[in-house]
Length: 365
Ligand SMILES: *Cc1c(COP(=O)(O)O)cnc(C)c1O
Image (cartoon, rainbow, N blue to C red; front, side, top):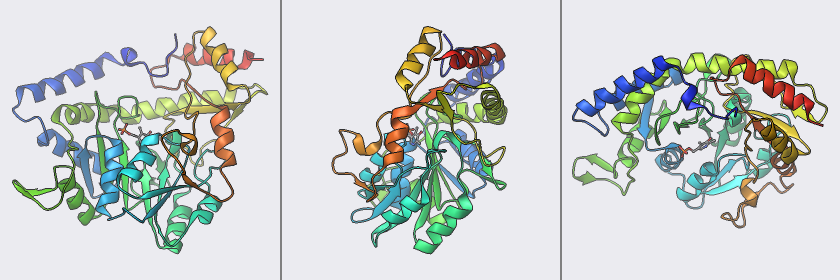
């Protein structure tokens, strides 16, 4: 079976580095918020081109903590996309704010600016952009949009580790950016982990406090916070894997380039190629097909796993009642949810695996 993620196929050298990192922590006497976390925070901020990084428990918490740090909560609206991991929406709700869903562009599945414009109200405090599948949108245009509207630009960069556009890395554009290091992300831990990056000292201090019960110093709690700390084991493993991120992202791009060059089936539509060579890190390689479920079945019969990101847009989720959406509806999101399919593009695919996927996808009738 050709898998969507194949940890067993990772290089032995990486495995050895992870074991050494884990051993270092197990032999230490620090397990939460220690030197490994500090080193990782410094390294991750450097890679993101930001002054600060705060390690937290997971990506969803990073978003909630970031919103709380900006005092975005009850009565405030945050414009975002229905085509995302539901954690994005849930984090906004957990912060007490109201998510407002704008439609997506059909050819990238990223947030549509005209639709976001229609969603603006006096209560809008921010646009939370999701760098879906690993793609960075035209961030200059979004910065301009948010400046005009006098709202914050925020980044959910949980799928875009290492993407670069106009020379700037994902995470460096917004007031803050949230990252998840869930194991299958381009940079993944061996458990849950996340981080928030920012240039704001205020946001940094507030999130550092909020992640640890709102404690400013030991015993003194300035506000009622969360328990969302990054642990030493995950930080040490992330440090080891960080050295491999660039290499793995390059392999993902090479695989995507092969798909673009060779996928040729009138029943399968590709999304837009990236605006710049490095502006997409192919967390996922997504195609569209009117008979998506039959295509997935066809691939499975030929030993190829595929997944759907995402079959149910946020406004159709049973857990979200009466979601606020663009007055024009969300037709592009609906269509994308019905047609999208993610093909394997993890960095341990062999050349012949990619050839097999292309051959079998092209044979789908
Ligand atoms: C994975 C992901 C999250 C959630 O991260 P967790 O670490 O699982 O909480 C949020 N947003 C997006 C776009 C994601 O892909």
